[in-house]
Length: 122
Image 1 (cartoon, rainbow, N blue to C red):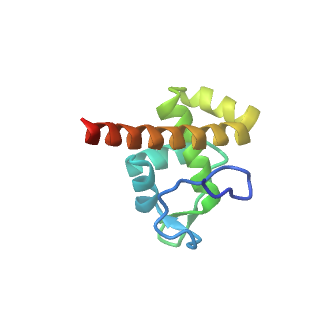
Image 2: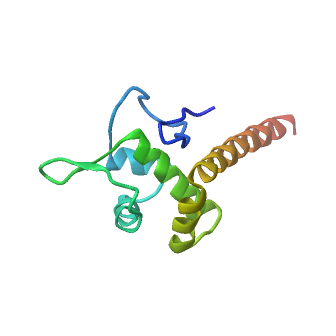
Image 3: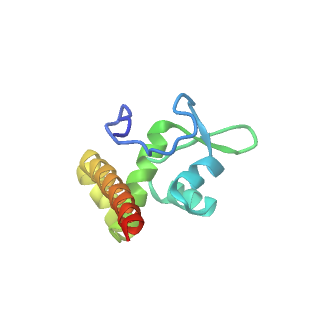
């Protein structure tokens, strides 16, 4: 099962180094298979998403930020919420939506594994 960060949201399974404190925008985008521009856009749209920036303006995402991104990704890309709907869902029940994202990911992984096993039996 995924790690749970201090805000109660689950973290993605595909961290390269779970001991790292911050992840670059490129690393973070790769975790979710989304363009870097999407992360920049979400940063502007969701007040809770506030990555650190260095003097050059490079963004660095904490585990809390990544847990929030996972929830935003789940709501917008998996459940099909609009950005407004995702904001409302997160405002009303952030922890539950984060847990739902974790469950869906685990079930999707199990389904993929079972399909591979089935293909091997054919």
